[in-house]
Image 1 (cartoon, one colour):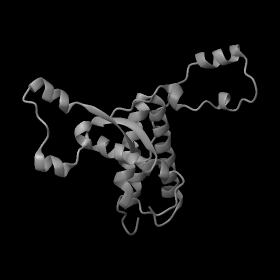
Image 2 (cartoon, one colour; image 1 turned 90 degrees about the vertical axis):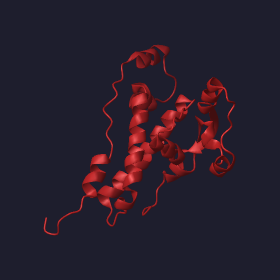
Image 3 (tube, helix red, strand yellow; image 1 turned 180 degrees about the vertical axis):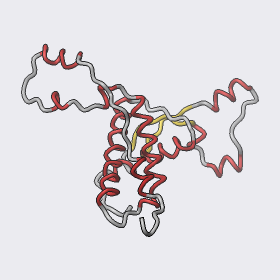
Image 4 (cartoon, helix red, strand yellow; image 1 turned 60 degrees about the vertical axis):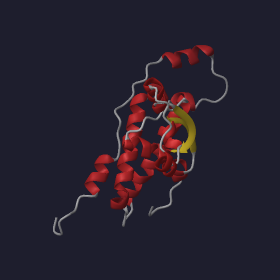
Length: 181
């Protein structure tokens, strides 16, 4: 990466609990040498293929599985929303870098940015409007809040806006330009 990032650590190092297929946790060299365990019972073998195991992995590994089309389950809704917010913070840094910095390394990181945007949009579509939209009114309150005001706030309808990513910006910046444009 060509710029210092505050939020890169959340993508590369912060671990989240997710369920992935058990076969993904096994060593590929071991499977090549000895093969996968079979019981010769079709029903049991199919069940073993779909067994999931709980692991803790960073967003970048989740992204790798997502791009390969491997099923990932996130058991905690709070983790899913936190993951989405961290991805968005990281993409917002990239957006600022692309718009205002010179000598960007965008062509090297184009695939990463676009795939992170896909994952973020996928999570965004799974989330409820109240989870994604930060409510400015309730977050700026100080002191005690009456139960009636809290109930009104919870019943107020929140509309989730369309997902807005940086894909268009990335694609326009990476097009080769003519010399005299």
